[in-house]
Image (cartoon, rainbow, N blue to C red; front, side, top):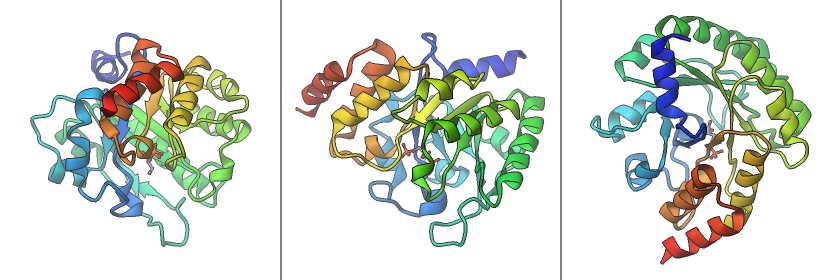
Length: 262
Ligand code: R5P
C-alpha cells in the first residue's frame, strides 16, 4: 500500500484498530433532519470524541471551521431525495479533484445491491475507486437500503459488503443485524463499520448493538442519529467511545452515559 493511502487510513482507523466515525451527511437526501438543522452547531461539541466526520462538501464548506484537525470522509454520491421516485438512483456528485481540494482523508459512496439502479451504483463505486487509488484516497462504500429497512439481515448485508470490497472499497459501512452479523464481517476482506439507522428507544440498546458488532468483528461505527438526536449527545458519544476504544461493556457504557449526563 502506498504511503499516502496508509497515512489517510491511519488518521481514520486508530492505533488500536478501531474507529468512531460521526456522520452528518443525512441532509444530502433528507434535507434538514431533526437535530441537524444547523449541522455546524450539532457537531461542534461532539468533534473532540470522533475519529472522523462524514459529510458532504456543501456542509463542510459552509458549516465546519477549516481549522479542525479531524479527518474528513467526504460523501460523494447522491442525486436523489426522500420525496423522489427511487433512492437508489444515485450517481457521483463530487469530483476527486474537489475531494483533494477539501483535504478529504477518504470519500464515501453508496451502493444499492438488488435495486433497480444496482449496476449504476456499483459502476460508480468502481470508477470512484479507480480514480481515488491514483491519489491514495481510500473509498468507504456504504451498503445502502433506501426505504427498505427490512433488508438489514445477514445474507443481504454479507452480499453487499463483499461486493463493495471486491470492487475495491478500503472500508465498508453497513448495518448491524442481530442474527449472524459475524458472517457479514467474515465474508468481507476489508474493515467493516456499522451505521446506527433511525434513533432507537433506549441508549442501552445502542450500547448493546455497538458492543455486539465489535465482538463479531466490526472495527467501529459510523453512527449518527443515535448520537446527535439523543438529548445528551456528548454523553452518548463518550459512552460509545468507551465501548470502541476502552472495551467497555454495554453496562459500563451506560454508567459513562449516566455520569456524563450530570
Ligand atoms: C445516511 O443518511 C447516511 O449515509 C449516514 O451516514 C448513515 O446512515 C449513518 O448514520 P445513522 O447512524 O444515522 O444511520
